[in-house]
Image (tube, helix red, strand yellow):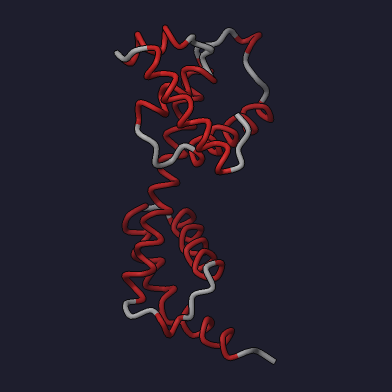
Length: 168
């Protein structure tokens, strides 16, 4: 026996899924990615425990969630491509295995999510420090700021990592 909420969600899904899928597919031009994004959109709505009857503009609501997911997907892919490009410059003997690459890409995505919302200079300082091992002096030189400013940037980034539960 289904609950009234489950029935409402089922009707909401059937009323809007086809439209949402077409809407996303026009943006992504890839059916598989569009299907994944549409499913994730509804999953996020479910996770938020939103009553479908409380949504005044369902298509605007769903397209906002989908747009954010598309942006996140694009950002993850850009991050992955940049990382893979950097790996391509390594000597073959130092190149990580496909399993290590997958783990590293996931770790980079987690870092990216943790640093979301911070200014670009703060993110750059953190990545220069953590990934490249640069000193605060070198980071300051690259960013055109003082060592003290780099220290403040690092404090901001580390606080953000702590708040999101990520261990740098």
